[in-house]
Image 1 (tube, helix red, strand yellow):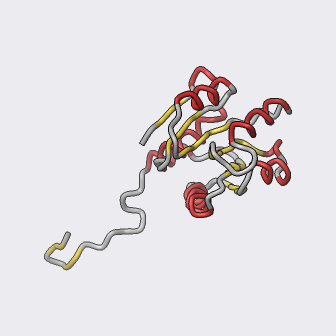
Image 2 (cartoon, rainbow, N blue to C red):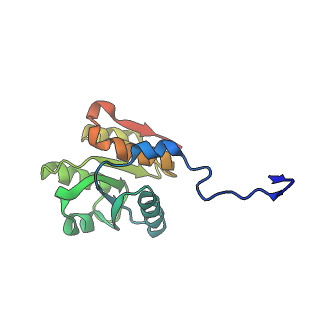
Length: 156
């Protein structure tokens, strides 16, 4: 919008959603991201890092299982459909190994039966791609406090 003093210059933080400030973690949390699509993986890593989160990303469930100290993981953001081990198979593996990591699934194919299966196994959220930034950040910040009674299923 132009004024009598020239065009209005937008400040870098103008339009920033201040409600996200209250969701900042009290301690450094490790968020792990399992996503096979390199473009989505990069975009989600950038989003999470811009929110002040420490992120480690993996292209497969197998890579996550091999290369992460799971006791440090505060939350896992995982695609459902992955080459090799699927996101749901990863969830089953973590449950079998008694590794209590809150899992947020994101998928391009909203399947109510799979969403129910994930919920029944303890997932804290099921998000449909394209994932809204606020929905993902909110699910991550709430995940340590979630129980299976507060499962969230969101669509775009």
